[in-house]
Image: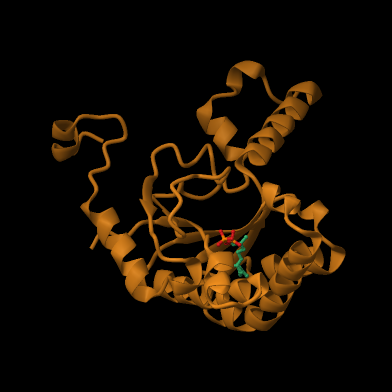
Length: 241
Ligand code: FPP
């Protein structure tokens, strides 16, 4: 089986999963922790190098203030509860997004989790919180503009590689496989730049239902795709990549 180096997931459908059971939306978000664990385990087992999870988008701030508060509390609790096991498993934690917009308790634990797991050899787990693909591109652009203004970068030296290096995950391989659960076929401002040649996979399963068998189906679909990166099928077959 061809294993992707980097899997990026939009975990959608928690609210609908809860509504179908007559439960509050928060119960759906809590239930969403189980597939998070499953995906971490499966990626570690299969040798996936990077797993990126979209936990809270720049646009999710528009949700009711109570839901935003509950989600932040859930992230905080999950991080406190899981960090020991993640560290023992050799997972390297990364958080991407506008961390300065989060409360100090969460931001400080994110800093601490990254520092504690920085040298770990296993799966890199990137969690996107207060993240948007446009935010990422604008932040990268601003850093490049500052370097130009400081005289340390010439505009002529800005090419695709230099630009990509400034993005939040610029030091990691680009996603090979994007998965979105919940039935919608959208990218929703996720990793806009680096999804350029990613294989897209959409599942009708609601996120709390996304189990190891669903994950295996996504990997199987990925394995059946021909990735051409702009070349012809014949070129790819001849290994002209
Ligand atoms: C989208 O479902 C889901 C979210 C905005 C939150 C995702 C959070 C988790 C799965 C919790 C744990 C995650 C980590 C990494 C600790 P939705 O609420 O938009 O569902 P709906 O479309 O059915 O309303």
